[in-house]
Amino acid sequence: EAGGLDEPLVRRLLRPGNPPSVLVDALLAVSQLARLSQRHYPAIARAAVCDSTTRLLSHEDPGVRARSCNLLGNMCRHSGYFYEHIARHGILDALIARCEDSDKTTRKFACFAIGNAGFHSDALYPELRVAVPPLVRLLGDEEDKTRANAAAALGNLVRNSAALCGDLVRAGALERLVDLAAGPQAAAEAARAEGANGDKAGDGQSPLKIALFSLGNLCTHRECRERLLAQGFEQKIAAMAGSPDPSVAKYVARIQNKIRG
Image (cartoon, rainbow, N blue to C red; front, top):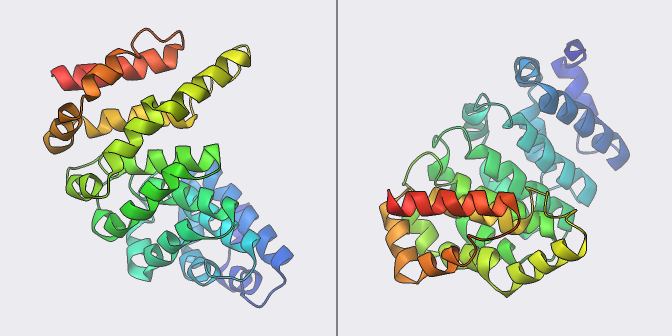
């Protein structure tokens, strides 16, 4: 099925002047292949999808911009295969700019793609440094999924090394993540979960839970850990240890182990 990804065909389908409906369908088709398995990555690379997608990130149609971000996220989903391609084509500046997009779906998928660009290694951390401030701002986005994706992306930016810890500290990422995990907004989320008979309690992708997981990543690094502890983070987390939600309890225990260890 990946045999259809010959370069001339993909270039024609992803030509910016095509109708938005054609572009969206083409982006969705390639994105689905990327999402299914990394065995499709070489065919996608040969079709020069990085080059096409870079131009479409600034398309006037929000659906095209959103699906371009989603495609990039899926191209980084299984491995760092495309990291070198992404760096070579200068895609990250255009992708990071989509964090400020007026379209909420585009913002959501931009966070998803940035998070995956930092997940498998720290190879792109130098280019991703400028993503920290917009990601921090998106922790206050109107959409739950965007807040969760932004929190996950920030956690991934310290997953593989401490290179960006100082940037996260200076941008106020630690305080915003703590607020997302243990502030009034988190309390409201927990109350909604109880009111939904536990339906949301099993959602491991909620902003609260993703923020807790990312805080666990931050606690791996001394600079971040000391900053958090100086702000009374240990006491806030201890208050959550008895949560009836098993995922919350697990993530809190992970944080406490890193603080003690």
